[in-house]
Amino acid sequence: MPETGVGTLHLNDEEFVEAFESCRLPAAQFHHADHIRLAWIYLGRMSAPEAAERMAESIRRFAAHNGMPEKFHVTMTRAWARLVAAARERTPPTASFSEFVSAHPHLLDKDSLLKHYSKDRLESPAARASWLEPNLIPLPKATPGRNFDF
Image (cartoon, rainbow, N blue to C red; front, top):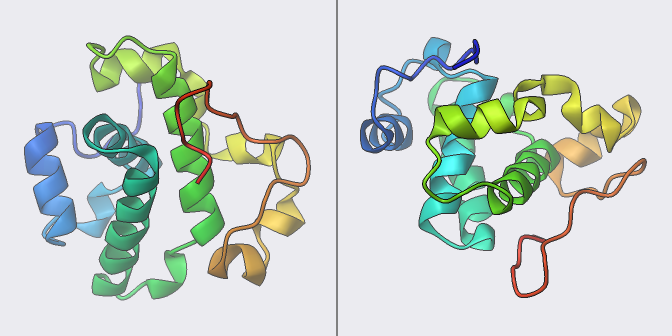
């Protein structure tokens, strides 16, 4: 697997989700790639809208628990969940997380959202507090019959 910056690969998926949701995971071990892994796990277990909601709740709680409630960003959380959902839709369901990110390396690039959003829009207080649609390139849409337009 290419270097992913995942700080939680020593944990299996169940251990990772439990440690994160219970806020036992040290904040220093939770990196961008771990956000992607969490979305990947949730999207494999529940519908895309449910996964996006659980991502938001879990990350908000984790940030608050670690004394950093200002780190939670609504638009980024939902946009990344959409990108992961779109990539997951194009990946065999048996793929491991390592295989998934190898097939979709753009997900590990924190700047990938800047293809869809201007920096000013993405860094705005409005984007942090509520969902804003992209102002450059639309986010991927689900294929007919699949819903990840949340």
